[in-house]
Image 1 (tube, rainbow, N blue to C red):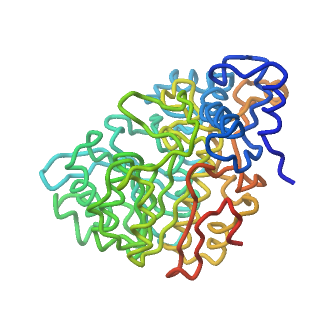
Image 2 (cartoon, helix red, strand yellow; image 1 turned 90 degrees about the horizontal axis):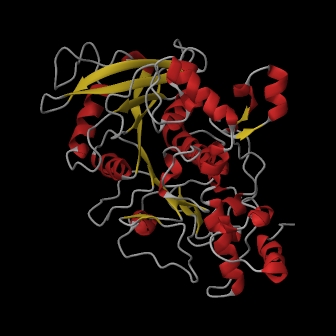
Image 3 (cartoon, rainbow, N blue to C red; image 1 turned 120 degrees about the horizontal axis):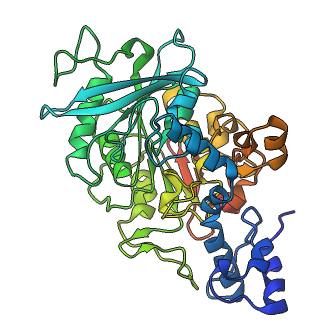
Length: 437
């Protein structure tokens, strides 16, 4: 039986009131349970307001967890001492990962205008494995931060994809929001698919040194925010792509032409010009703006193209960059990164590999299994006993996992999570309502 957070919070209110933001009263901390069921509160009701309080509190849980974790600060200091750069999760630093959990190589590539860009390749630890499907993870905030010592956003997804057996290209395509990013991403794809015998069309002296590790027949693309829009456009424009996963692409998508299976992962809270919005109470059901990210699913389904929309409970726009980070200005829930890993791997498994069990992972509405938890190596909770027994603070870090958690409780209660897969053979309009396997 699901334990409802509304009953817990209602008792707190009756006992002493619930004033201001969720962080206003230290004695209320135990009342906010980010893994309990919020139920299905009626818009405009007291139950709604209580669930809304919980949502706002949980939208910062990742940041608070990192800020209270001594292991984060110890790992960060150790990275800095070794020349690390970048604002990302210190446990995700490439120097800690390459050669231990996977393989990595810095590269440069030339675009169609002759400009040279940085990038990186990630792959499985076994370099002799059969050629694998490729995934391009587009980055527009990585300039100058690649390198084995680098710690940048989105390493969690590149590392997880590589460990899971994909050959991953992580290109820096230029400044955030630059309209040229779409063409540069197509140019980056040219480089990724180039070989020694068929070098890049933009520089005859360049080719992908890992071309023998790549199966060019199966290609996926991923991005977040503005590069989420890039991934949506390039993946559905460029015939070389077979699947797309987009993280919270907020820009208008009216001109997009659906072509390939596309998953959109969305946040409860939008990034606005005024900044982070989780501090603003919502007393009624939010209504998505026409043409917004919440209508991508309808656009693809109506076009007869496989699609899935996953809306994260208490998720913020920072959910997919570095949510478990003390300095994350956009906030982030605790489980967002692990949940995003779970669905991203399952989507690419289904459409790039044809994995037999991926469909069940995508459509399950019971509990998450543990298949993606093995790739969770980032900042999490702090276990003082583990640190003491190991004799070092870093050893006390316990990464966040989702295995065993109820799917229902991790999905947004504001916006539907839904799917239309395999030509609509498997379809669901509201995963929280229990459809699916």
